[in-house]
Image (cartoon, rainbow, N blue to C red; front, top):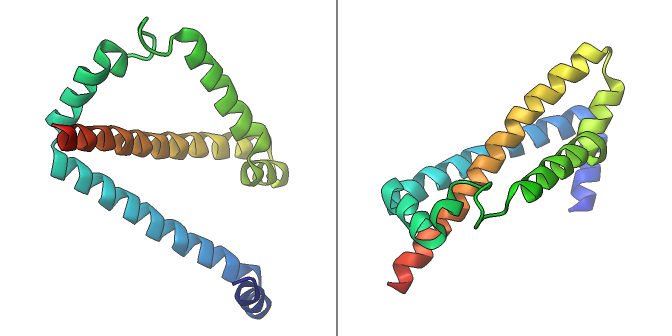
Length: 139
């Protein structure tokens, strides 16, 4: 695989790498959306929400609830997610360092924040769909 990547990078340059990454992003995004819609259609949104309510109660919908994670955990996650996104994630740091102005950096981070929120939302839908599927199999 490494030899294949070296070969097409040598022939096409970095443009071929960017195009390949873009195509991979499109395929993965479409696959995630199809899987998410399929899971919700198969299980039913009301069944998924009822399973979360029956399993976790109010804490399943409100992370600040006393039986849930609590405010300190939520604030910790916001801090860690912000630190990881702004300081550790390689692509974000490289793009921020190579941007022509601070306004460009702000626009990049706003766009990335929306994309990260969308990915996290899809991941949450997958998790609650899996919980509902497990509840269906156990009953």
